[in-house]
Image (cartoon, rainbow, N blue to C red; front, side, top):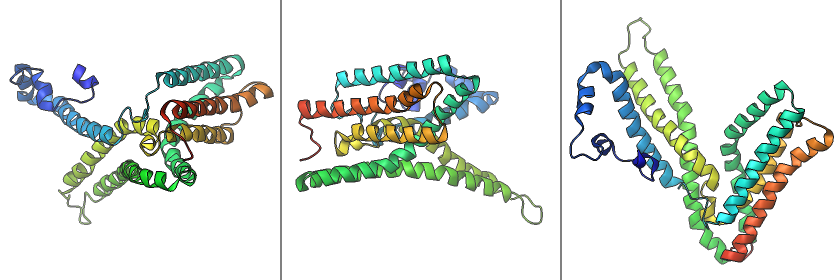
Length: 290
């Protein structure tokens, strides 16, 4: 199990051997009984797909790709700010909230999870263009190849998101065409369904492993410029504040508390982001204008 929690998952053959020179006899016993195939074989196939998708996802979006310059102090402050915001939100709900406010808060949380990747993909080009305008000609030439690499990884993510609905459409069309006009069953349907389902399963695993690192790194924005993740964070938090105010309305409580709840979170995130940029400049010589 330690191999599963590490940087790389072992191949299926090594996993079944569990450190032995041969596959364990219990594994062979399970495979020889057809009554276990409905559970064992799909699990083995899912593991192979999950390992392949995880390897590709982490190759495109490294787990620690958002830490171009690892600063433990910044990481501690970010965690403290996040926990403080969570506690304050819960206190507001407990003190001023109504029963329906709890369900609304949960709905807003799920909305943020769904909106974050596309909003980040839309916001990143605008921030990068602004950073390009600030940079000098030599700095732009240095950033261009990194930007192309980050763009290719973003296209992988966009392609995966786009391909999943296409696979679903293919499965639906295959099911509708399962019978010809004469009512004779068309025996190619299971193969078309399988051909569309297997890539879709791989893509779902890929998105599951890639989304977290992609969001944390701003789709590898740190490779383009070390300050880009902080700039994107400061931009996204105000966009989320506007979306929450429009879609979810004001938070519970008196008007003063509502204003503080609306502006306090984005303001604190922006302050931490600019402090991170300050530390990048003073400790690592990273500047926005050069």
